[in-house]
Image (cartoon, rainbow, N blue to C red; front, side, top):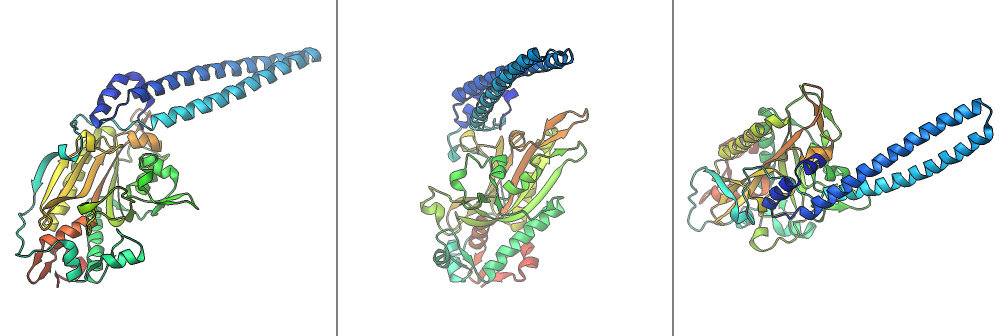
Length: 423
């Protein structure tokens, strides 16, 4: 959430920068500023009424001491009227402040200066490519055919049990899932991330804290009876560990990693995007989250990108890194780098990680602050990244490592799988 100070100091800057995200902010900014002005006016009136009440209370005490009870009773009536006005004013202030917050949360995060304008994914910048060239055997198969051939992922059974987008992993397919989760967690902890195991359901306050609510409510699975949401990513519960927390200056950085199943409705997805493992409603993902002081957050972002790149290189997969344009940048992000793997069998790129810096946007919603060297309260910066999301990693592993004699398991995974080939 943007701060009121940012809007007060330079509203034109906010409008101009949000236009990079193809967001016309002028009407909302003007409304927020008007509500903020009214808020301060109501506060001044309220302070004035309280001051009058305090003066009148002193008069009542003085009159009572002097035995002038009738006059004291009249002043008490005046105080009662002042209290009634104060209550009315408080109700107006509460209504005004609620409307202010309701409008303020409609404004997305300000994009970093490196983020270029653009309409969508087609305008994203490729900043790096790496990994080996992929040479497939003749008659190479896409991963959904390989899954059927080796009986490792059962898509029809998932439809029977739940519905489309909920595959069943079997045998070596299930072991490969577990191996990837363990491999990612182990590499993350080696890099200084503390492993946590969070709940996979969160309350509305957690959804609001990281920006999923109210922006992405339609994409989340909701448990109405308990008013809980199934997590779309471990980012939500892990970042919310720091909700309403004040960190000391020497408690940085905070580095956490977590595995969770993730649940997304993926409304509007269709065609080749939902084939096989390309887009699921339930999938496994390992996440990394960092809480940083503002002056260190972009160095931390570079470290996170390098860490994810190391994982992809260890798996021996062809990849590219993109810096998202304004039109493809999420509501809450200041800057995001996507990792994509090349699926040679499908002849397309598959996104497997987003690494983002949210600067103070989430921290403001979370009330996540720290005391600086001078003891002054400041908002921290939050960052997160997929490290990694499994489905499309599995898709690329199966497709790119297929041979006439089976699917070769990358060497780094063999200590976790217990086998070197799926055949």
